Image (cartoon, rainbow, N blue to C red; front, side, top):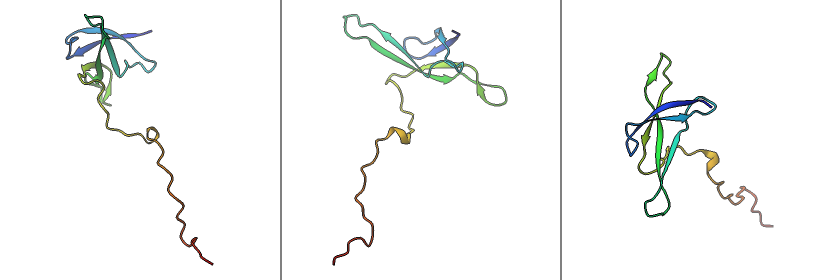
Length: 103
């Protein structure tokens, strides 16, 4: 598998450059999670780094290099609400006009 040396910004890994495995598209993963063991033997703390472009290259504006930026609160919300991720709304009662005839 291919890997790419990727810089990290913020958090405990600030200033480090680590090799990160690339996916089938040639990009590193959007999230990089680092488990840090607890000194007291408790559950490990997970540090979350989010992939950001390190700069633009070429005239088209495609990104070739990436960097990871520390996200202290975990994964930030993208603000995008996809229609297939919402539950289906409850069906409304059949209110067809003219159907309430009394004979």
